[in-house]
Image 1 (cartoon, rainbow, N blue to C red):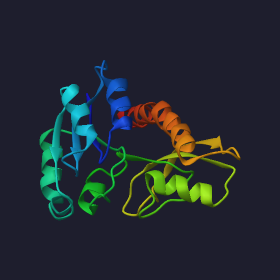
Image 2: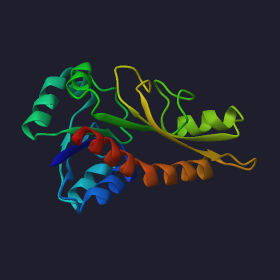
Image 3: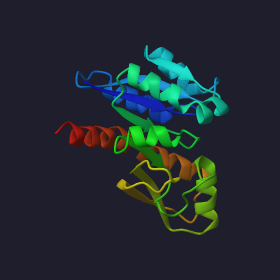
Length: 192
């Protein structure tokens, strides 16, 4: 049984899709949700699905990485998924789970990536740059923001009348459709 921990800071729409995707699986399960915000919607999603959750403040997370690692090890977590998690993972977590951490980013990396580039910030930058296409990137996590090995990308066309909200919806459809199955694919590679 592969056990997943989801790290999320917000509403948890991607986390909900991942939890639902693996809910009836005997070989892969979401075992833990970790957030840096006590009011994050993802925590309610975890409760509704009887999944344990842990909340760390920003300082606790950045300065107490060994305690987080201990929780992951105690729970025998095999794979980490960043689903709208806004903090950079401490090096001890990245090195302990090297090759077993995926992040999703709402642009076609390397464009519009890096520190501060998340959510609406990315969509605004894409629209302001006048791009004709954008998309999602799912990548391995390393010690640099959005610089890990790309494992999946899918693009969408940006119409001339595109708004922030319409672009956000297009990107969320791609995220919700692809992230769970890419996680599954990457875990299957590890299981071989």
